[in-house]
Length: 250
Image (tube, rainbow, N blue to C red; front, side, top):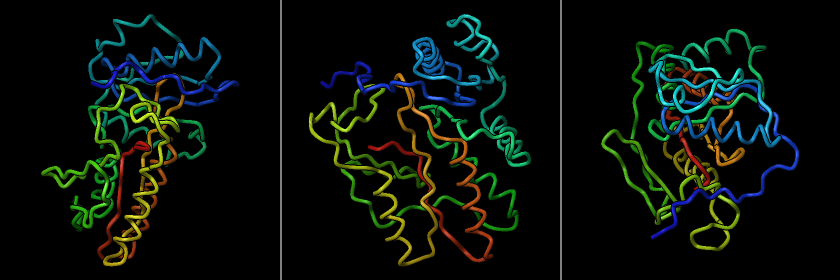
């Protein structure tokens, strides 16, 4: 059995990371853990940030019970998709409101939330066109590769159970050897392969990387850039495929 203790031994930054808004999707057990870790990191001067926004439709979610009040932490009571529509719409209308250091902490319960937002945006932009999820062929040939009924492809270079909160260090804690793989590179190669048979844009990747104290994030800018690329792909009027992935390195 693989040890499931948090793999938090990756070297932390010597000088504080400087972030803007940190948007945590969900105020339950995962969101509470992430907020606590970020506040521990701030107390130890490993990170600075403007504020933490926890998004949950339950005004009495776990974070309100488990963590003391903090002026830099705010609960936004809203459905995740509604919040994202409002948050990104504001950033697109007023680009000056977007900080380059704004990041999102995704929820493990909704790993494809950003993809769903891109689909909703595309359908609103082109109401008369078909916008759908399609299966991928050929296979990227990762050790773990399975397709869900909704055509989502689940890939991993790990055919083992990874440690909880693994930071994906250069030396894999399970095989105890160098991590020679990188999912972003694999999907870039897959996009080039797909493009040989049909116009394929991307990849649009929401890559969750370890930031500090076991918390992974991706940038708000990456989401807006993904939406821009989808817009460009569909602007020609003809059919176009866009490869989208919510990934880690593994």
